[in-house]
Amino acid sequence: MSTSDVSTETNLLPVSCMVTAESKVAPLNPVTVPRQELMGAILVLGLTQSVLKDLEEPMQNDTFHSDSIDVLWWIRGRGKDLVPLADNLIGELQMLTDPLQR
Image (spheres, rainbow, N blue to C red):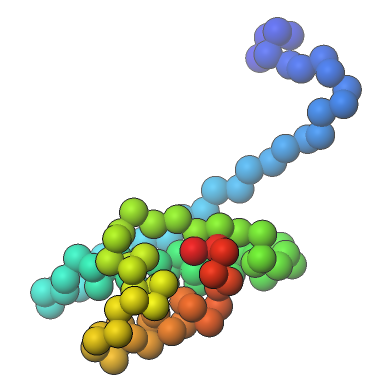
């Protein structure tokens, strides 16, 4: 690292970034893409809870993003005719997050 890469300002606070990841293999049985995206949202919520528990931080400061229109539609409560599994997973997401985080 050269000296030009180091900031000389003293009023900057140190910053740290933590990267964590989790993955899950798609099941052998055929599953729809929206259901896989919903399971991904549940996976992210569980991972976030685990990390924040270790850091002893509240989850109110976190925002969750998704590019899945189906999952966002369901979480916002507009999907009423869902199979029990999807309904239970969406209920879990709604119960554990604040509407402003979605």
